[in-house]
Structure formats: structure tokens, C-alpha cells
Amino acid sequence: MSDHHLHLSGQRFSVEYDIHGSGEDAQRRAAILCIDQTVEAADHVIPAGVIRDELLGHVVGIDRVSDGIHRAVLTFPVELLDGTMGTLLHMSFGMAGLKDNVRLTDLTLPDEALARMARPRFGISGLRALLEVKARPLVCAVLKPLGLSPRALAELAYEFALGEVDLIKDDQSLGDHPFCPFAERVTRCAEAIATASRQTGKRCLYAPHVSGPWPTLLDRASLAQHAGAGALLLCPGLVGFDTLSSMARLPFPSLPLLAHPDFQGSHYVNPASGIAPTVLFGLFPRLAGADVSIYPTFGLEYPISQEDCRGIAACCRSSLGACAPIFPTAAGRMEASRIHEMLAFYGTDVVFV
Image (cartoon, rainbow, N blue to C red; front, top):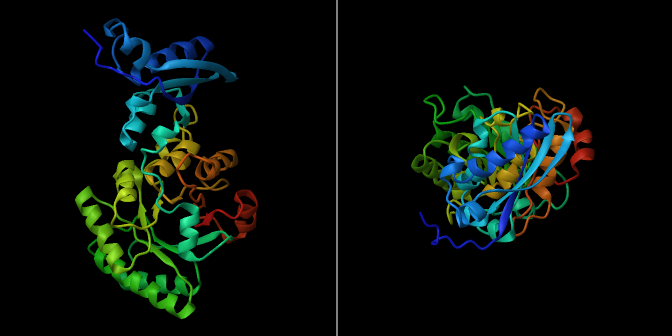
């Protein structure tokens, strides 16, 4: 068996895992991750040469974090990435995600790999320019509850827009129900918001929830932009991160994208496994092309900490090659009484939902 056809550059990306157990457990499981996250084969069938020496993951360090938790940093060849989110998710946590006591906590890509990702079309600066809001936090209202008619939702959207919010998004429960068809809802709500915006002189972007299999989702997104929607809401946990990436790359529709965390909770709620919130709600949506990442803020009914939210905001806004900074959010049925607290915590580059 020959691996002479493999020509690897030597450039690698790094992935960080928290491994629960003893130091010996961490050493053993890190070594298994090197194989499982690449060739996923029994050690004795891996041939000598480039595959064994360069293609497999390399453990570059294992440090004790606390009693029973060790942080392992592994590197992998950049040639294992292809610019898609599916491959990135697979390479960073594909097989590891099937096991307990392993948690993905960080991911670092070289600029070459970052440049191949979808990346946000607008980001913070582009969204502010669209809304002509230079510095303050943005405010997003939500159309709910499920069960209202398109006419009732449009009336609610009109009232929100008269109140001069910046964004109005569908609740993620709104789809294409017989009592609230997608096309009618989006058309009515877009028209109502446009009417209110003419009265206030203030722009407001409507983000309908687009869902379904790819051809249907694309049709709905196109219909939404033609109807006057100013943004789109997607749930990558339901439709896939590559669907979000595809929307960010398309010449049309070409709207700001809001990523909602629906169906992603099981990835982070167990602190001993899954994916850290900083990566799941910060880094992944940004790499996939979201302009706003929605997630529950701390102090509510969700198992997410203040430190988690600080890390998510940092992942959304820190320097990341050619990947524009995006808006983190303060969301999850947060009450208006916490606005000042959230402002002090997040600063002004945040969306209050």
C-alpha cells in the first residue's frame, strides 16, 4: 500500500479538547483522537510513511485544567479541510462527538483555511451601515406566538416597526403552516414594516424564518427578498451549517443572516462532552457566514454561564483573518430590566432580542 500520491504542505490547524478522566486517560484518548478524527482505522492497518507521519493528528500538548480534566491540543493537516462547514465539523468533532468525556473547546485555522470559508457578507459594520446606526446596540423584536394568522402577525410587525426597533424576526416556530402560510405571512409582514418605516423615517429589517430542504428553502429565501424582507433567519441545527454557508455565498438572495440555536442545545448542555458554547454559538456561525448569532444569555433558564457568553462575544468580534466580526446577542426571553446589565457586559456591539 503506497501513499506516494499524498503531498502535504506541512501547514496544520489546531483543535482543543477537554478530556475528563485521569492523566493517563487523557494521553490514551488524545492518541485515539489523532486516529479517529482522520483515518478512523485500527492502528495496525495504518501504513508507514506520509499517512502515519503527517496525515494523522499530532498531539502537541496535554495540560491539567483541574482535578479530572485535561486539555489536549491536536493539530491536523489543512489539506483535510475543503472550505465547507460539514468537513470542518467532521474533522474537528465528527467521531469524537460519539463519545463521552470529550468536549471541543477551541479551533484555530490558518488564514489560508479561513479564506476558504463562507464568512459573513455584512458583519457588524455592514449591518450598521444598512440600518444607519453608528454606535448603539441594535434591538430585535420577535413575531410570536405560533398560531396567529398572517394578518395578526403583520399587525404586530407594524406596531414593532412604529416603535423603531432595528430588526424584526420571525419566531423559529413559524414555518409554512396551513393556518399561517409562509408566502402570505412574509408578504404581509414585509409590507406592514415598510409602511411603518415610511411613517417613522427609520429603516427596520424583517427577517423571516426560512426552513425546509434545500430547493424549498432557497425558493422561500428568494421569495422573501422579492417581497421586501431585509434579512433572513436560519436554524443551522435544523437545516445544516452548510445551508447557512450556501446562503452567505449566493449572489441572490443577498441578505444579512441571523443564526438561531434551535436544536443545538444537546451539543453544549453537558459540560463533560459536546461542544463548548464559545465554539458552537460564536465561531461556527461566524465561519458559516452568519451576521448575527442568537443564543441564550446567562442568568436565564439555560445552562450557560457568564463566562460562556463572554467567550461567545469574543469569538463573534475578535480578529479572525478575513472573517468580519459579527453581532453577538442578549436573547432567550431576556427582560427589559436587564438592558443596562447586558450593555455593561457586552458593550454596544450587541443585538438585544
